[in-house]
Image 1 (cartoon, rainbow, N blue to C red):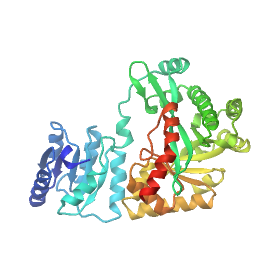
Image 2: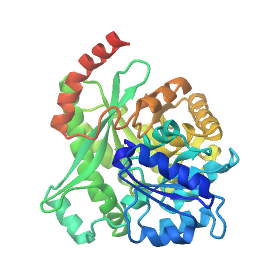
Image 3: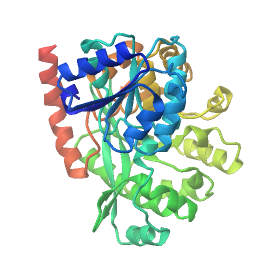
Amino acid sequence: MPVSELSFLVVDDQEFHRIVTANLLQDLSAKSVHHCANAKDALQLLKTVSVDVLILDLKLAGMDGLEFIRHVGLSRSSPAVIICSSVEKGVLPCVEAMAAAYGVSVLGCAEKPLTGRRLSELVEHYSPMSVPAMRAIATPASFTPEEIVDALENGQFEPFFQPEIEMKTWRVAGTEALARWRHPQQGLVLPEAFIKPLENAGKIHMLLRSILRQSAQFGRMLRDAGLQHSMSVNLSFESLTDMTLAEQIMTVVASQNIDPGAFVLEVTESAATTEVGRALENLARLRLKGFRLAIDDYGSGVSSIEKLARIPFAEMKIDRPLLVRAGRHESARVVFESSLDMARRLGMTSVAEGVESQAEWDLLLALGCDMAQGDYIAKPMTRAQYLAWARDWPAKVAARSQTV
């Protein structure tokens, strides 16, 4: 996003650097520029003005930048942060992880004095959605389990579909079904508003049945249209403890005359590393029936490689935050490369989730990732939109190859 569309607050107790940075922002036509010499004044200012980006020195006198980030996050009004401070290379990933835990997004780090070029590079990462996921779900629409169950029974839920692309060939290899609720008054409702209430009420199986049935029907439509795209559906941990799960899924897929091998069942990293026998039994049974298994959101939890290796996963879907960190820090890049290497050694296809830019695509290609999914390729779509997009995709790929 251009500097001219953003409001800034510079927090630095060194007057020279504070004024130089403020003047730089004004020269770049920033929408508004504020500056403070200490964190306490900055917190007071944030109560009265709207700020998109903080430019912050971590080594502030009194309340330091780390404590300031914590207070900003707890205030629920958090702008994104650019750290303008001399810090050791290994410290920044820790600061970013800390900030994310408080609901604050760090766009990156710059040395003093900040230059216009470096500033422009960093604000390219900014978008209104660049704040961490916890900010987006801090105040979701409040629905009771009864309301959600009624909506399920009335057919208000449907899957949207987001494609997965082979990086070397640009071929569409598969698509993931993502649950959406078409609320008659509030419009399209995202999963963070209904997944947890359904899980807490023990009703998540109702959502799975609905999404699975519709996804299988769409999978048949894709096959009939000559599109050999695999279909991915998410399974919750609660679903994995239902001993009728495998038979339910098999019945739905068979009703559409679809080969189980064309279905990918995704489970989160935390569910995959569980010690619950029922869940492990279901995963083994689903694999025996021919379904492919994928570990979802890899990198979002703390897992044991030994625990992952005991389940015959076909795919490793790597969580977006790990990709973002790999683009900024050498240590995170090493972790990302190690994850890709582990996937290869275990016979898994690696899929990077949440790819949003050409730079991220280029990084994944250089690191040898197999597949990518994200808004850079296509946003989640309805069935009709997906079919139209899939028909147009070969022509887009052909046009691209002529310009490369």
